[in-house]
Length: 460
Image (cartoon, rainbow, N blue to C red; front, top):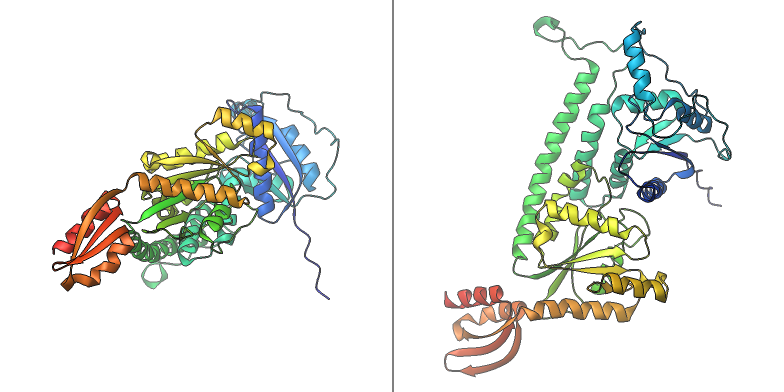
């Protein structure tokens, strides 16, 4: 008999709605945070939301909401002081004023919960980015483990990375996240330093931080070697016809990749299922081949360290000949998700690459919703990765894009250079061939750059 699976940790979501964030966007952000938490393996049992002009400097929420949160976690709802409090009335008044800077009534006393969660939450996940002190204060007030959105995303990346390159990239980002959040253990002595043991030396915290810096340096050195090798492979594909699937996480890029290339890439209904760049040939194969790249998905508030770490993945989009922006048409927030994708790609200079918008998962929409999308986005391609007819139509669209840029040419392959015939067939479509005393004459259809390269090879 198999052992029962362990019960998932109960988590409560916390989000502060700041000025400029609409109610719709706030609700969408909270729902997305819930999906991130579920991807991490936790069960969302409740949520706490509050409108404020700014995050409370101590613990994100105002006193009343903090006490409500503590009712869900079994905490005290107050932040115990870790140092003797100075009697400074002016400072106390300023702190109180900051904590009361809310846009809606914040209960001074914790209001009883209308529907208490069935389980006491052991994890608190905050949609806003937390400073180390805010995270510590929330832990003291709630008695629960506290994560912010960045921490959740980094942990998901850490669990889903498969290739050595992705693991190195994620580990660098994770260590950069952890380093400023290290805490000094109580009563930690400084290591003795200097000749004969004289000198203050390093504290245990300083030693841990130095170890992290050294480890990051090692990881970056190893990553640079791998990326150099990847760069060589990309250079070898430079003249190839390349398409990159880009878009928000869980928009269906991997499903389209599998349908277009008949490959066995991982497909899962979860956020960040794909962290490794996969390159496969379009099927049925064309001459010359068209390569399809599946890339890591984007998300709102994607940590900058992860964007920097996955620069090699983003380079696939930058160096592609054609970008297919994939969006989940069944998600009402796909427009803002699409804007996130365009913003990130614009930051690396990929906005100039020719592109088409793919509205995936239209099988989940009714006829009226489809018609509305066609009217709103007439240049978009509506399809479902599950529909073979839609996939065939997309394949033809990709082929037509490249054929529109191809030109006819004639190549003479001398008999002494017959070893280059394979290169010609790989880089161009051969329309006809004839033989004469000079060699093999091939009439071809190819991209101008590929044709120029072949002519150069044959002239040497």
